[in-house]
Image (tube, rainbow, N blue to C red):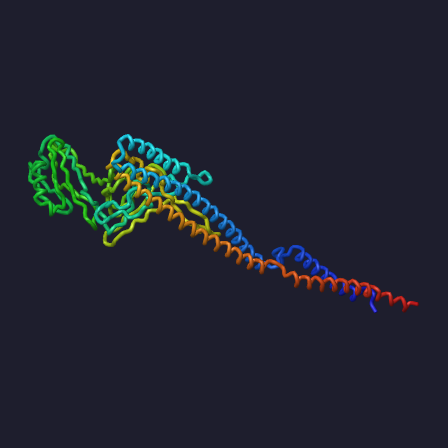
Length: 471
């Protein structure tokens, strides 16, 4: 018998500690309802469940975003509903005014109501808001007042998602100027003598010029062989300017190459320069293959410009941020995609860029084409019927688009809620505790703890037996 080390007591004490620790963990899980209370409980399970938890919260917020988007659409659609009613009343008045049973005085009275209704359409467009965001004035999207104007040979506008007054382009591969490119050679001369002898090369074709040739003679010679040079020439004796004009064509850059190989008469020509210009409506830009240039799109119509390898940027004063597109080679048909930068973007997913785009066009009187409605005589009243009917159809199309988006969002909300529910169930299986199983473990550990305490008392009594030997 040994008394320095009570091995039985030590073993019992260790078992008691293990039972107490296990019982404490069981009590922690039972009290929190979680199987994983810290990373030590299940490191991998904690990492997985945290990712799921992030997705769940993101999905819940995306569902709320979609509901807010639905409310925004309903607000916009409500404004358009009233716009529809106003347009129907305006059409009714136009039909009334087209009847010759009305006098001029009668039509003037009808015109007064039409004017008030037109102003109300614009007011609705300016004041329909959601969370201080105006919806029907064009600021919630990008629009186009022209959608089918021919822009250039082989190119036609086909989209309605551009800034007001700017046309969209899809083309059959035109990559050069649709209208003539012009090169102006300023000879800065004091007389009509151009060269003292030499050569002029235009677009790769060389012309021998005799000494004393005048500007008019040079222009005539070029025109006689215009098919070879690819240009026509005109000489202005008053300004001493020789103008070369090249017709644009598909598949080639709009470029006029002019070179002089000879001696200028110092008394007649001090310098020569070539400038190539292209133009859209109301704008000019220097053309250089591979270069960038900008065209002001303010009040732009179907402009004449097609370039090769150039980047074109159209800017518009107003609510658009600007539109950018590139044209490439003309060997294949090209499509120009214009990004509608001002469209509303609804975050309807838990992750980056899971968005839904929605553009709401300008629904004010001017954009609908009814700003100048006149019913003061029979003919103008008849024209007004057609104009108002077109506006009604435009509003109908916009409402249909909004309705389709709202229906889509309803399905989006259902899907988000279902996904959140399924992920929550998966996260629960990883992180939540099985209460019945853990109660069983807690009961077992409680019994073991009590038994260990009793056995520890017995183990501590064993050394007392040594005293019996000493008596």
